Amino acid sequence: DAKTTQPPSMDCAEGRAANLPCNHSTISGNEYVYWYRQIHSQGPQYIIHGLKNNETNEMASLIITEDRKSSTLILPHATLRDTAVYYCIVRVIGGNTPLVFGKGTRLSVIA
Amino acid sequence: GAVVSQHPSWVICKSGTSVKIECRSLDFQATTMFWYRQFPKQSLMLMATSNEGSKATYEQGVEKDKFLINHASLTLSTLTVTSAHPEDSSFYICSAPTRTGGDGTQYFGPGTRLLVL
Image (cartoon, rainbow over all chains, first blue to last red; front, side):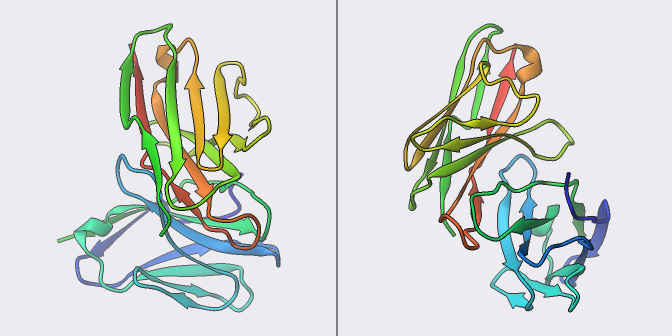
């Protein structure tokens, strides 16, 4: 079973920041937080991951709370192409462990 | 990011036939690959873990004799759906971690849509 909880759906106006929350209150010290998204009829796309520090790349920013029990993915300027299902996943460090997908958040970016 | 390819991207077959799906890591080697299945409006479900040079490990409820997995090289894993039936119609997706251990990020193929008539 997935160890994360996400809202089932969210809307965001085009050009505005999209903030997607994720709860992972049972995360262990040796687990990363990963974010992926799946655009309709495609394979999941890697977005970003982090352990305890905030992270930023060309796609998004990841804010992890100090107690690591929750995180927020931020898409700074959402576009229509960002409409997708976003998955927050915790995964243990090391080894070749698979990703366990929950239901994710369906983000709809509206013009 | 790393690239994972799948072939074919879609396939239609008659009931009772076998279908082979290939998963390739194009710019990195993968000793492990994962196979997932996704039904409409559902999330991805892990089917099996493909290990180069050894037998695959299957998730509970997945028939190993029906879903044959072969990890022939460090860049290729194949999933064969044997004696396919309409209930096997689904979206099959593979993934591979870029490196063993550490925070080896997993990258996914584009998926293969299977329709069994």
